[in-house]
Length: 467
Image 1 (cartoon, rainbow, N blue to C red):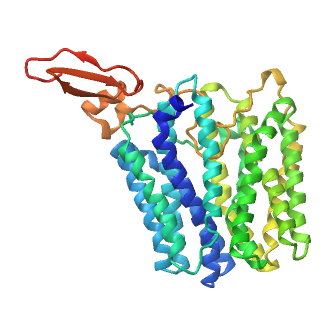
Image 2 (image 1 turned 30 degrees about the vertical axis):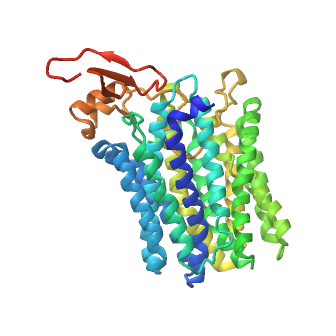
Image 3 (image 1 turned 90 degrees about the vertical axis):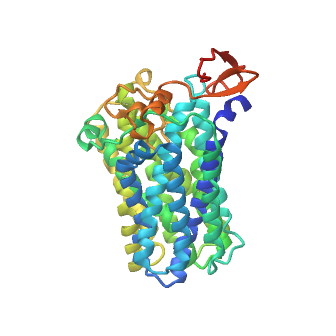
């Protein structure tokens, strides 16, 4: 295990720090916005703005990596995200907070692209599944830790924003100090809804609907809990409960979908989601313990749907088009995520805190009806023809996690030698293992970073003293 983690340890540490800061700030901001007397609808707009930035980054963040390189892009995005966290308590205005969250979403998606493309570079076919599984598990754990770290803070103070900023800022240190090779092929997101629809109509409309529902839960549960008169620590526990529920059930549900028609699994999860959401609406002033259990059930019902939809899409996708399909699905999810918090917050204004779960229930019912209609249009995929459920490639943490290395010859993949940031000698380093030279007793030595345990080997010394 140690041999597996050493080459990517710096990246994983950075991921944990970023997501812990993100989990803290995402839970904190709706509460602080309510404390500042922002309207529910304004809070919904602020919540959706994160996804506006996220979707924009899917189209444009690769250009920054090509121009400046992985490390400098990562450093810049971390700095902007850290600064945005600190600006919230300094400029308490909904319009500015909308802009800050847009910036945060853009930086968050851009950092995902850097890290995931780097991980793809640093893994082999033999260990790719294990590495990516560790990465996805860490994303869940880090978000949960970030959400729970809000316990004990006075949300009216500067302190929680400062802690979120510090966590994100510290993420740059492991990456900046790493000696790992940084050039890696980039997969450019190309959102072709017609092609995605022809591949799998459920992938397009299903993920659009899941974005409408899940983004509302992720961003507005703290506001709901606060309006239901739960304390700050209880709000943190409820927000984390949704993530915990989704994390523990995702793999078992995915494996179940390998055995039966995945569409039936989606229908079952959609019905369970609608029923659970309705429970939260109809139970008047539920006790905290009851609410906690229902929130875990809500996470177990809502969060795995995305992964099952992706697996269903992969059943109808050629292996060399996985990246394009997953990118298109992520974009559909992102578009839905922009609209979801706005619509849910509007219902919260009109019918109270429970309006959030009316919205979730309605969206889930629409999803169920749509998927059921598709059962009569397209036959089920035979079990023998299914693509095995992959915990990593179906997670909605990015668009570049791939079961196989990216193909530099593919139309949507840009090879490192084409990056302006790696012109000249750096372009050669992008095509080979990054190496270092040291001078020892008149001889020069080279080490391959892809194999850090390899002995230093002498190379011929030229007359000018350069190896």
